[in-house]
Length: 131
Image (tube, rainbow, N blue to C red; front, side, top):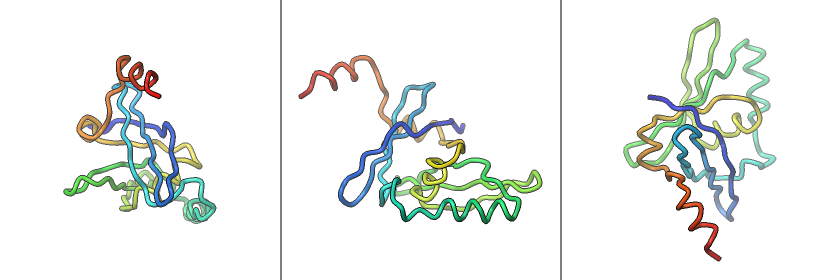
């Protein structure tokens, strides 16, 4: 079953960024490492979105999936004339669209439960008590 998640926050490191995806219903946070900063000026999502608009194609949603080696990747689901099309994409490419436009992110609940972090009051209390 696909679940809707949202970008909670991201933390930039020297060579990568960790994006934290949040499932409000289950209170699960999924950390996802991507190869570059989402705030980078190198983004091409605006250019691609303009091309899609010209072709009368809309981005329906972003789906996050898992490879056999347990790394995350994504699919961009496009819609034209009520027909859905799928384009495989690196996670960072898909998240650039989500960051700039209101596009739903969908992820299998099994991925959230397997790789996510369940947020509990105890976990929050312990995290806040640490230096």
